Length: 319
Image (cartoon, rainbow, N blue to C red; front, side):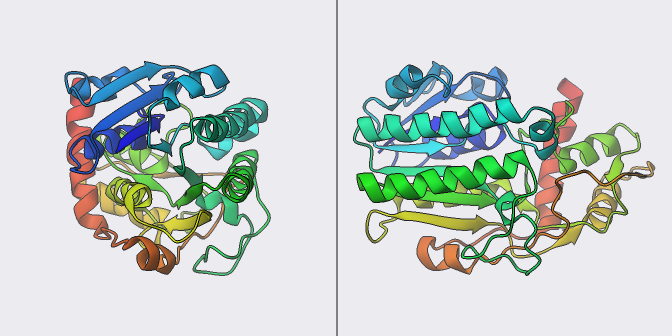
């Protein structure tokens, strides 16, 4: 197969590129990225690979999307502006990239007769739903513009699958972490922020009292389920959504303690105000993915955190 990955220079995208170039059923990987949140350095290891191709372009431009889809068998759409706080600060830009860019990619795939399309949704679509664990068939009311964009993505994906005979898989990621995740900038995720603080002996800020829980998910799981979504035979041309998580929950205080212990850090956390738009308790039911995509997550948080910290030690030392 020939696969297009949008956002391939980003955290998740670059991990996908690495895995797909090693996969026996994939003979070409093309990346479309504009480096809005990704980095050229994430693609450098692949540039000499004859099975890799890079196109610099913007998903907000239909012409770029059409060009990137030419000759491809499937699309793996990861390009987006993440972060709930970013979406609250700049809802229009988040909408433009996450909704307009998403529809551009769907339509470019349709025009190029691409029938398999997988994309990044988010656990944020569960919103204010208090039931736990979260099951794909029931969502709450969204709590942020970011969540609204991801919910809109799922609605468009549903309509494209029905109207154009496409098989589309949306993956609701739960707090992904791992190598290549940027620890810098105002919208960095909690685990890279915690690791950077531990390694630099500075105090991280925990939003709220630290009892907020998350189903922290190693990026390996995200990579594996995207590949499964691209290659697994699914019944009928339709839209599927899957939770991508471990099915375990950890609060922020405990995740900081784990990172602190693994790095032998003497830093102490500071507690700040709770962020608007945050979901308080997050735990996924992953049975649907297990049944249809043979999803078997790596759920050893301790082991995966050790591997991630080792990557950051090298990354921070060389940055």
